[in-house]
Amino acid sequence: MSFQPPQRILMGPGPSDVHPRILSALARPTVGHLDPSFIQLMDEIKALLQFCFQTTNELTLPVSAPGSAGMETCFVNLIEPEDTIIVCQNGVFGGRMKENVIRCSATAVMVEDDWGHAIDMSKVKTAIANNPHAKALAFVHAETSTGVQSDAAALCTLAKEAGMLSIVDTVTGLAGINVDVDGWGADAVYSGTQKCLSCTPGISPVTFSPRAVEVIQQRKTPVQSWFFDLNLVMAYWGKGTKRAYHHTAPVNALYALHESLLIVKEEGLEASWERHMHNHLALRAGLAAIGLNLPVNEADRLPQLNLVAIPDGIDDAKLRSQLLTDFDLEIGAGLGVLAGKVWRIGLMGFSSKPENVRHCLTALEHCLIAQGMSIESGTAVGAAEAAYTS
Ligand SMILES: *Cc1c(COP(=O)(O)O)cnc(C)c1O
Image 1 (cartoon, rainbow, N blue to C red):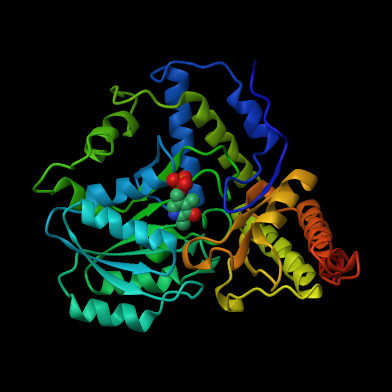
Image 2: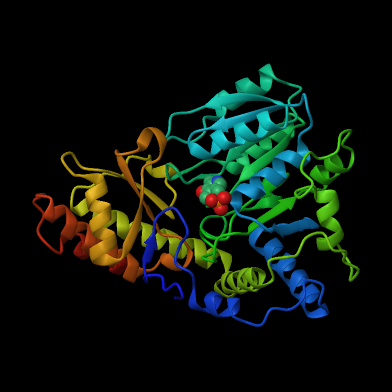
C-alpha cells in the first residue's frame, strides 16, 4: 500500500510546512542531471541562492544532503590536521561544530555560553587573544535548540580583524532573519532547506568567500571526505556549460529548492523577515496573555523559533501528544539541558502565518485547560488578534 502521511501543521524546529507550489514542483518529470535544461536550472538556483545569502560569492551551491552535510562541507574543506579552531557553543549545534573539528584531527578551543543566551563577545575576544594562530572562528547564527540569535556581523568582524576565517551556521536563519554574507564578510556559511525556506528536507545551501576558496585551493592535505571535497564538487557545480559527473544530483529535490527560492524572491527578503517578526509578536502576545513565559532575552529572540517555558505541573509529553492527535499540530520538545523544561514553537517560512498562530494558541490553551490550568478559553487568540490589529 502507498504511504499516506497525515496532514500535519509543522510548528517545531523544522521541517516546516512545505508550500504546495514546492510539493508540485517535486512531481515534475525527472530529467538527467546533465540535461541542458537542468544545467540552466542549476545556474538559476545558484543566482537565487546568492540573492538569499546576499552575496556575490562564486562558490555558492546546494550540497546534496541535509544541513548537517553543509556543516561538514565547511569544516572538512577549510580545516587541516593540527589546525586550531575557536568554536562558540550556546546550544546543541555548536557542540556538533566541535565534533566536526575533532574529526578533522584539529583542536577545538571552546567558548561556552549558557543555553538560552547569545554568544558573549568579550569571551570570544579573550579566546582570540589567547589563540592568535587559530585558523577560524565558528559559531551558530540562529541556535535552533534555544531560539537564540547571536550577532553574526560582530563575530565575523572579530574573526576578520584577527586574520581568521569565519564559519557560520545559519540553517535556521536564512530567509527568517537578515543573513548578509557579504555585509558581514563571512567566509563559509551553510544553511538548510527545511527551516525558513519551507522546502522539503535534504539539501544544504552553502557559500564560500574568495578568501575561503583560496584556503581550500592551497591545502597541503587532501580533503578527508571524497563526497564533500569542493575541489571535486566544483567540476559539476562550477562555471560554464561544461559539467562533469561527480554524483547524481537529487534532480527533483532541486526543482523544489528552486521553487522555494523563487517564492522568497517574489516575497522579497525584507518582507519575509517582517512577516516572521509580525507573527512572532502575535504568538508572543497570545502566550503572555495565558501566563506562558519566553525565557530568552527579548533582544536575542529568534522570531522563527520561540522557546517557551513549560508551566509547573504540566506533563510535557502528554501535552505534545495531545497536540498531535487532536490538533495535528507538531511543536518541538526541549533538547539537551532544556529537555522537559521548554517547548520550541517554530514559525518558519510557510508555517509563519496568522492562521497557524491562531491554531497553535487555541490548541495549546485547550490542552493546558485539559491538564487543569485555569485559563479563560479564547484569551490567547484574543491577545494575538489584538497584536495583529495594533
Ligand atoms: C536543523 C539544523 C541543523 C541540521 O540540519 P539537518 O538538515 O537536520 O541536518 C544544523 N544547525 C542548525 C542551527 C539547525 O537548526
